[in-house]
Length: 148
Image (cartoon, rainbow, N blue to C red; front, side, top):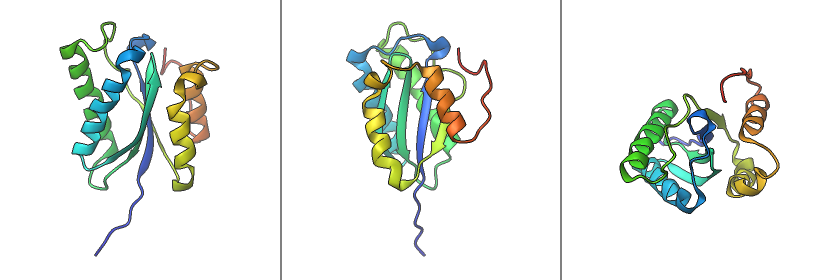
């Protein structure tokens, strides 16, 4: 029997303490690294983007992969990779926790564009405001103190 699934998630997490450590000149290297982790789990990275203090990933999750396990792997292996190769000298670690929001197929393309244009978007709003908006749009409770 075949299974038809569309498990698309918008995953967002930042640097520990909101440190602006993810310099633009090496961000694409980080995104390629994360793409490899996602692909190794049989999943698809539709789009990656971000700015100095956080990243956004739009992922089509394979049904055999637990979302929380994938996020832990993305954060832990990329932290190790960043530190080992000194990709971002000011990087300490990723924040504790993350945001993961389900995405309907019909909104995927507009979200791809939103993630692609993160630098422009963040010339107008900060990470905490954006994250708060995502949490509230998903009708979740925002807790002050979750982010710096």
